[in-house]
Image 1 (cartoon, rainbow, N blue to C red):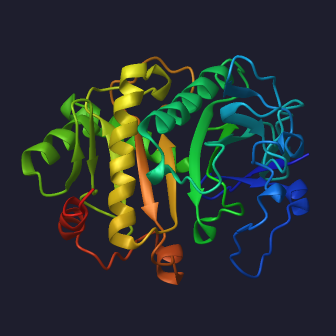
Image 2 (cartoon, rainbow, N blue to C red; image 1 turned 180 degrees about the vertical axis):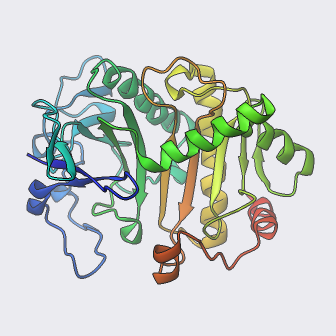
Length: 334
């Protein structure tokens, strides 16, 4: 059984996922499984038996579960960081706090096509992936043990991906991650002082300045953050205040798919198909619309390495100028 252990100094929880030692990864080098024989890829159509049984699939009406005919498929992670079975069993060990590693860890296989990265997908296919995220969040929120759902995508070996086939992941947690809690706290302080959402103000500021806007549509905006941590880091936010991604509508999802595709195409054009991490930050589960928080997507190309100064201080050294970054991205011909 995995464990969650709490750092007593800053309150950060760490997953001790001992059972992932079975995962076939090499700890010495970044190595992506770039298969030439697609019959060995567990995410290929026809290889459904290589994964655990599907939780959700968007598929043809004449197809059967765990067989070909799908265009998006969600399965449990074969090597989960957390397990859904069991009880929390919160306990102490002297001064230390710990609990069982209860949660859910799922894989969203984004397309049947092995080489169809998200930047290359049709908008309708991206829309289906975004809707699968939403469907799974809604379902996982029914489990009262879970407090937070993190959706993320690792693209490329340097970003942590061990398989090339396009996929994203969902992890449901029994606690709210510290980084999200820090966002919630900072946003609440801003709201209590100004009676406005900091993210809504950010959007209005960026729309006014236009210096860091990368993409703009009726409902969404893509911007380079003013205090950009990493070169070409880009955020996507809904213009209308909303803290819960699960409240996304079909029309929202389709428009978001187009803006996300264009943003990824711009990053691909400037950085020559970079590895990247994509994360979805939203409010904790089962919290009624928070007036001070705003869900958003963060995309972080992995073109530099986090080193000693960053780890030791929490400061980030970014060798690019955010305003110039946005200009480079805007100038990409789509």
